[in-house]
Image (cartoon, rainbow, N blue to C red; front, side, top):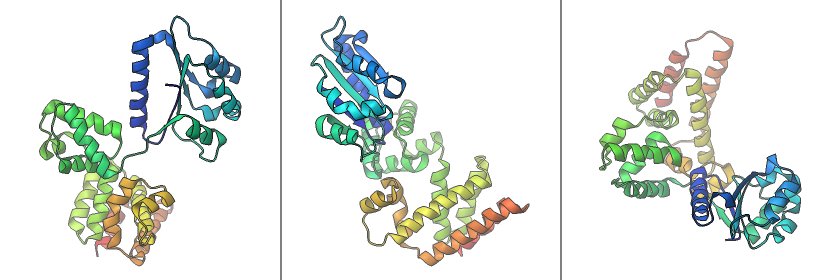
Length: 307
């Protein structure tokens, strides 16, 4: 196996890959042949000893090394240290996010089995959900997979938990059961609220606002979520003809966030967005300086968005 590097923003996929590697190794060599180290909690000499020493009561050993970038001495000397690695040692390096300008990142990317797990965009995430349901002995359509994502968000671990719950309730996962057994995330509903308002549907937008309040989401939190959604829309409107991948690279937005908001952004102009942002700023400032009824202020803001 040699040296494997596991990285990327997709924590669910990272953990799954690591779990598979560790379980396979332990099944062959036993628990005693596995050593777990956090680079930021050990001196360089300890790391050197762990990597270069021979296995005990096993033909091979595995060292699981987390966050090597946090140990400057290791990062500076990684190239020479890894060249000393005996054939009896398998090394798995786990670093969620590298500084891609660093020599450590460049060396590991070039010389190790480098596995980078990034967040899935909406189409791939929906396909993954369908497959996950199948593995759980259930069936799920692509349309209902997209509905589940819209309701609970894009966190893969959270989605996996929802699939397990839904498949246990009924192997035929339907829209009805998804709506019955899952809760809408606040961020998802705020997008629906903004979409309804900008589409000229104030009654629906106000209904969604009341849903948020019933979920105990405070007005100040709703202001923050409005601000985020308007920020995303402003970026997309300003992006012009750039592709979703170019926008994601430049803005650091998730592909799912872009795909979800892009159709709405196409219908808006900067002037309309700027007016909405200015009005939201006024509400936020007034809430910090005066005693105002934030619910009433936000409801009026929503009606004005739809005008």
